[in-house]
Image (cartoon, helix red, strand yellow):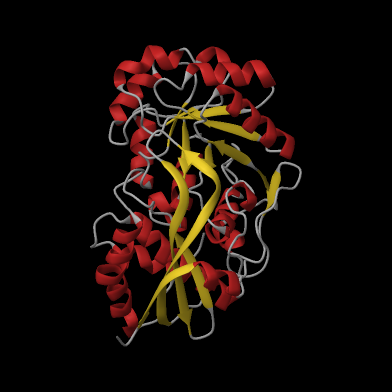
Length: 380
């Protein structure tokens, strides 16, 4: 990934909030979501427009970031720093360094970087996939299944997704909804279904023997069983279970990924661009994992077609050897805000073509679901 793109001049940055209902409620160990309050970033340059999507949640439950806070930190601290850089043209590769003085707020930074990168790539007539280093045209598509109200409901939901052709199933788990759901899914659909579980930090160091009860079910991995700051605890759990441990919330940078791998806390890494500060840092995490023989996969954050298209481009890199959570748009949205929604093709999704991230906005529908718009100009 070489920064050989012509630099751009940012004329304005628009922050747009939209409200979209989910097709069905999505329950994890920390919340149940029925709709998303989504913050979009639109960057206008001399010759192009780029879009980014902030993956902050409605509340600070997955991480310490949330939509209202992400918007405020962009307005008060991040965007002014970008505009102060106006003395010379900018590359998306400059964004992380420009914003480095502001601690954390990786999801807000990632959204700004994504919009600038999309605009720069469109201005240079280069696709995001080729710029990041993707080598595939199609990537396998997995689906994340939330905690159900009953085992019968879970079986029905999983069966429906398998009928649709999804290549891998991920079950959300929590204490009390852990061993039995996995046992039932294995008994119902067999060992041939690629299956993994995601705890979203719901367990403790003392739960190693419990999690070891998942070993007989031939799972691909157990994702993030312990709190994000407990790297040592994950290393302890990894020595008690045979199933590979994968880290998600814990991995916020390439340096943290290196530390976690070298300490034996994980043997697989989930990469979410928003969680790590952007797609450029996501590529760096991919690279350090590849160098150490650790496979990666692309996680999802209930994105619209903007973030979903960018995730597909990322998932085309060579070390994304495990099926990611890049489901079709219709998995979450009755209607998407892009014209070319992500669709399932025999258990796979296709990398978007064209310059930038390869999508076009559905302007009328976007206007219908917008709840607020703030436009900041470089001369403000």
